[in-house]
Image (cartoon, rainbow, N blue to C red):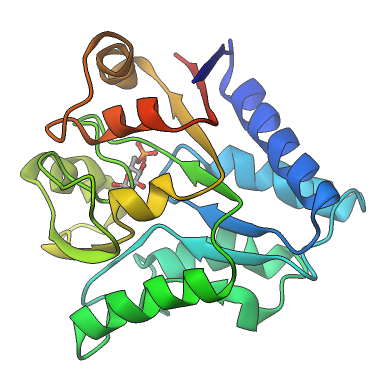
Length: 235
Ligand code: GLP
């Protein structure tokens, strides 16, 4: 596990974009795992700039997002589909058929989870996975207590997660109770992982990764078992 401390949010975003840029240059048909939340917004801006400058192309790339809320349609402002269109997909040349996110409106959620796993497998697995982290140590939406053997599944969001994510929902609209997320094992199968964390509120969470053992009570601790993880962080 490599820890890279940065001074500014911009530095973190640039550093992460450089890793993704390198990946796409070395393997244009890379399968990228993507994350949402406030933290990676600057990273996506950097990546879009790299594309505009002509340094990278997404023409052959594929992407799989970590998660999506259940009951939220892809065109709704609070969906992760919409977030990804706004921050990345609308600005780069990725073929729409190469973009994958779980369908939060699927009538059969279990089937949707199995289908998502199959799609990842059919693409040959994820080459490079981006992660953020929740203050309770969740990655994707894998809340404390999630099995390390989990694959894409439906989760009930923890109260803390709903509180933290309420800022992304308009007043009067509550955070959904359920989400579909890649499982811990799905994430761990990625060949390389980059986790971004910035801000005072994430310091204690990062210290727990450093200091505590590996336990399902703290999902991000699984990353200690992965051979190629970079954590880029600052406050
Ligand atoms: C959500 C997402 C996570 C993300 C986390 C942190 O719960 N499902 O993938 O890492 O938020 O978000 P933020 O970057 O806004 O702190």
